[in-house]
Amino acid sequence: MTKPLRGRGASAPPTVTDEQDAPLRAGREAPQRLSVGVVGAGRVGAVLAARLRAAGHEIVAAAGESDASRGRIEALLPGVPTLKPSAVARACDVLLLTVPDDMLRNVVTVLSASGALREGQYVVHTSGRHGLAVLEPARAIGARPVAMHPAMTFTGTALDLERLEGCVFGLTAGPDERGFAERLVDDLGGRPIWVPEEMRTLYHAGLAHGANHLVTLVSEAMEMLAAAGSDDPAGTLRPLLTAALDNALEQGDAALTGPIVRGDVNTIRAHLAEIAGNAPQAMTSYVALARATLARAVTDGRVLPIRALKINEVLDTAVADAAADVAAEPGYHRDLS
Image (cartoon, rainbow, N blue to C red; front, side, top):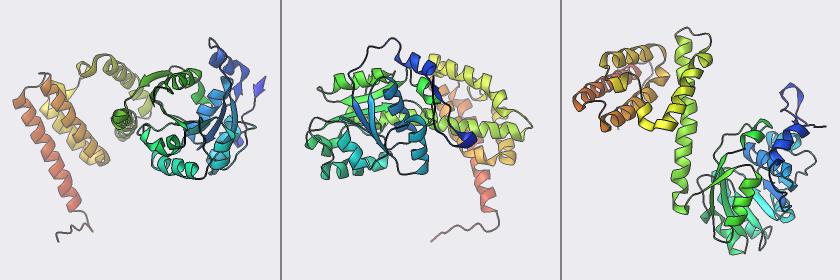
């Protein structure tokens, strides 16, 4: 039997079938049924709730203001009522707060002050940056705080459900909540790692640097290949990037190849000239990453300091030339006051 996901038109998300649900439940003991509410039905919240529902928990209500959020609730959580955040909080024993980082403190404060939270209730947020401190207003009234961040990028569709299998969740919780947090991650199909409160921001920075900046890097590389005449930049890059990523994850800096670690000054100079002429939007990141790569190659002894000095001079010249080109553009004005 198919469980329809009520998307809209041709862009509707994929459907979830009983066959797809089965692997999510296989090999797991039936969990103690929880009543779960979700405030912030964005890409993360709706998917986590759908996964918990597949694990046997009851999603009692969800809050989402935008059309996109309401569409996700319809698609991934059919039949779940859409309520105001305070009503969602009052209706559940486990409250998932999947709102943006900068909104989280205010949401917790407002829900706590309004009496929507209660003693013994689990309040779980999915922010990577924040730990337990942001949930202090909830803890002060007796709620049980947990920080649970999935180290995954989300589409907000049913495609994400199987991707959660084996996903790492960065957890921070007090001694009395650790067991619950681990069980919740297990029901989501994930693997827990424990992140100290004071290390949450660094943990999140590492994930953002690796994933978000990778998207920028790959997009710029595809733009360069397209400018060079490739009719399939993604297909050209995929085998190379897949191999590079696997090698980097297994070997770290030892996986570095290319003109920087070979000390090929003239190749680097040629790269910079072509980028300046055909893909100037990539100049800043190319230079920054070249410098970072060079520093690591010098540290491990693959590039001699005298060769590194020559490469840095080439990079400095490229940056100065790019700045001069910008300054020469019509309408450029530099305020020297």
